[in-house]
Length: 260
Image 1 (cartoon, one colour):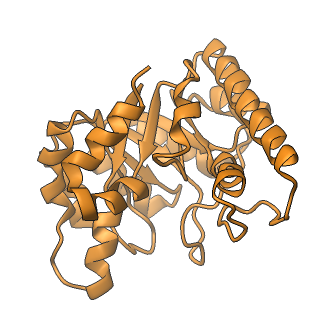
Image 2 (image 1 turned 180 degrees about the vertical axis):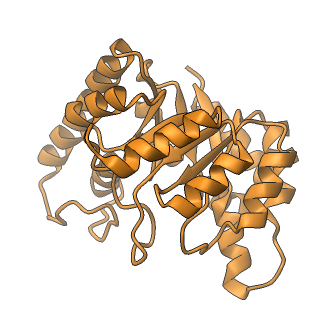
């Protein structure tokens, strides 16, 4: 299973003080040396962390493939088309959200999404769609001509946190209910079963499958067992651990958990 390291949160730390340090560009060699397979960044419309010059420098200088997450906004798609990262992952965006709250509402008839995919393909950029795990979304992604899908695993992470961390104030938009442990275990089992079955369905349709959002050192081991998921994109927990261990060790720790 491949690991894409999302380095947005290095830029989040920089923007907290609106200074030039830390620079996410400095992470590139460390991520590569640590055995990761991909750099992931998100150029948001509000530029709350990664800026245009960050994206340009990272794509130009990274020795690893760059997965650039983006919305369908014309300005953003034009930038991505010019920069030519290895992959563009189209995600939904809302200005008021803290982080991406769910997957794209994908249908085969969305004009803006179709135009964005066509423009990216014309620029020789492979396309992934960040979706909630549902058969309808997978079928629409295949119909739209995407090469990849990435499952939003926030619901899985939320259930896991409620079951094993006794957390009730979780950020992934499912009802915050004080549920019995047996119920949570069944919910977790069902969510994993759905991810496994849908990833097989996607592979049969010719789509490659990634997953990400809310994954961490505790909950990743069950996702790793799903063989048709080829890649995980993980950021916040790795950058958080790196404060204590250093970035290289934080990535090595995650890689160790992802060995099948």
